[in-house]
Length: 200
Image (cartoon, rainbow, N blue to C red; front, side):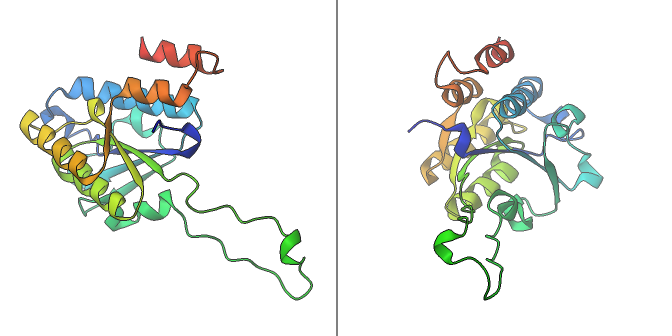
C-alpha cells in the first residue's frame, strides 16, 4: 500500500527549542521535519503541530511552527488525550434544515469526517510523546505512518525501541524521501521539480 497525499495529514510532535539540544542527531532530525512540512505544503497535505508543556520546554522551532495550520499545547504526553484526534477527524456536522428543506436525494452529501484517515507522524521524543500519540491514533483507527528519519530521542536506543514497538502495533515505518515520492507517484506530477529541489 502506497501513501496517497489526498488521504494524508502530517503531525509534527514537540520539536521544541529547549528539548532539541539534547536530542540525538537533532540537526538532522529537525532538517527532515522541516522538509516534511514543506513537502506537505507543496502537496496540499494538512500539517498540525504539538508542544509539550511549552512554558518549560519552549515553543516549536519557528521555521517548523510556521508550517503548521495549528499547534496544540499539551501536558499529556499523548496529543490525542488533549484533542488532537478532533483536529484530525472533526465530528460530522449535523444536517440542518426544516420541513421545507430539499428532499434527501437532492441534498449535497455531507463530507465524510474520515476523508484523510492516513496520519504521518514525526517528532520528539520518539519513545514518549510520539509513541503515546501514535499508539492512541492507532487505537482510534487511523492509519499511522512514522517518518523515522524525522524522529528523535535523547538516546538512539530509546528511539529505536519506539520504532520496534510502533511497528509491532501496526504503524508503517517510512523515511522522508519515501513519503515525498509516494505522494508524487510520478515524475509528471506538477510539483515534481519543487519536491526534487527539497530532497536534494
